[in-house]
Amino acid sequence: MILLIKNGHVINPATETDEVADILAEDGKVVKMEKNIKAKADRVIDAKGCYVMPGFIDLHVHLRDPGLEHKETVETGVKAAARGGYTTILAMPNTKPVVDDGDVVQYVHKKAESAGLARVFQVGAVTKGQKGKELADIRGMVQEGSPAISEDGKSVMDAGLYRKGMRLAAECGIPVLAHCEDINMVEGGVVNADEATRRLGLPGITNGVEDVIVARDILLAKE
Image (cartoon, rainbow, N blue to C red):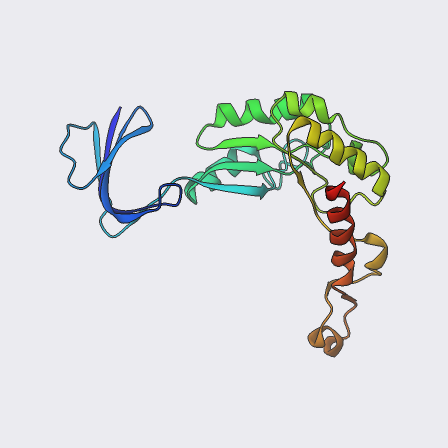
């Protein structure tokens, strides 16, 4: 299929492009970008007054599949992504079961392929069940296509175990997506501690809760 997008304001950071131009694509790949392209096309889109950009990438989404499909599914998630201009999304591992081995990664990736519309890469958990006691099958998940590991909305409080996970991630050539929060310092807090918190009588969460783990993770990353 040949697609011609005309008169759009093309923005592409990779090529430092920021101008009005036409784009010609064949079978899903851009083959030409210049002003006033004259070519026969199966479909022509007049993008005058619109921006034309590469697909966005969201590094943190929640598809809730498997196990929590009443909140979101792979299919509804990729539809929402495509609608918003996102062509690649990374799904967090806090599902039921937790994404802590290659089988669950494979399950999500196969469902995403059948749904189409946007690419889905399933992030693996750092620890089994996200319980912070034992490392997940990081190598197995990477072999199935996991691009990163993360405990999503929590930190691995055992620094020694987390360091082992970080080292394994480095060996596999993937990053660790860190949620920095010392759970022992939250003390029932429900919102950021500030003047409004005190005025409303709500238990606050201080910045130190994050800072302590940020500092720890930087030191571990340095090693």
